[in-house]
Each structure stands twice: as C-alpha cells, then as structure tokens.
Image (cartoon, rainbow, N blue to C red; front, side, top):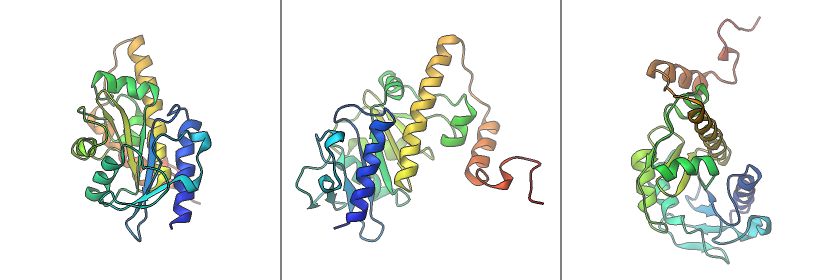
Length: 223
C-alpha cells in the first residue's frame, strides 16, 4: 500500500540527519496521500541509518494503523491534527535542530531581521506554547500559532514545519535552522532590529510570486 509514498517519506526522513537537523532517533516526517487521505509517517524509536521504506507506517486521519509492522511516531496525533485542519498541508516535519531548538527553549519567536526570513517565513518564526508529547496538544499549538509561516517553534520542545510537499516542508526545516543560527550569532555581536513591515511584505511577495522567474530581479526581462 502506498509504496511510492513510503519511499518518498523514508527519503524525506533521511534528509533530516543529512542536514544535521536530528540526532539518534529524534524527529520525524510524514506525508499525506492526496487520493486516499492516508498518512505515511516515520516509525517510533528507529534509528535513521537502519530505516527502510518498509518500516514506514500508514495511518488514517483518525490515528488507526492501516499498515505497518512498527508503531508510528509519538508525534502522530499532532501531525494528524494538522492534516485534519489544514487541507493545504501535504507534509509535516519535526526536528530538534540545535539553534532553532535553543530559541524554543527560551519560548521566544525568532525576530524577522533578515531578508531570507522575510522571503521564506513572511515574518518572525513564531513560538507556540508548551504542549505534551503524544497528544493532539502540539497540533493545536501549531494550527493556532503558525499563521502563514511554514515553520513554528514549540516552547521547551523543538521545531515543526509544514508544506504542500515533502520537499517544501524539509526546505522550511533547513531554513529555520539556518536563520536561527545566524540571528543567535548576530545577537551576540550587537543589537538586532526587525525589518520594517513593508520590507517584509515586499520580500515575501517577491519570493512567493516571482522568485525563479525572469521577473525575480527588477529591470531584467526577456529579449
């Protein structure tokens, strides 16, 4: 069942240690099949280097295991809560990446003081409240606090990202760690001021609608 998606979810999970976003068995990635609505997710407690597509677990949106020899991730209930309330979300990623999780430990959002943040997140990376692992409470915090950002910090816990595809959700996880590190270093150098709202909006609009096209840079056109 969903063999192709199992391969994609396994590969997506393996991207997380490649980018230094998880250690040992921490973190997880899931994806929703648009045809059936079923979700494929990383199994609980399995080290990444031992992971194969056959280890992935298929669950329905109510949390019933449809297929899989292992137990699904302890964050499954939270992933499913997001999928039930955000039809635009095709993949959810959870990491404990070092710098972003350090921000989460403080319970503070990452201020939008870089154009790269305005591009990717459209503003600060928000921080939701503390929530118990293994329940829907994390999903509630995600849905209530993430806004239009593809990433959110969970206080005292770590990072969750969402996207229409596995690639976009992983991209957000990579980018949030990158900006978290840069802003943490910047704050050690001196005062950090947020970008003005108009500049955040302009950068987000350019990145969302024109990045990757001939119109990405002003004054450039075909012919």
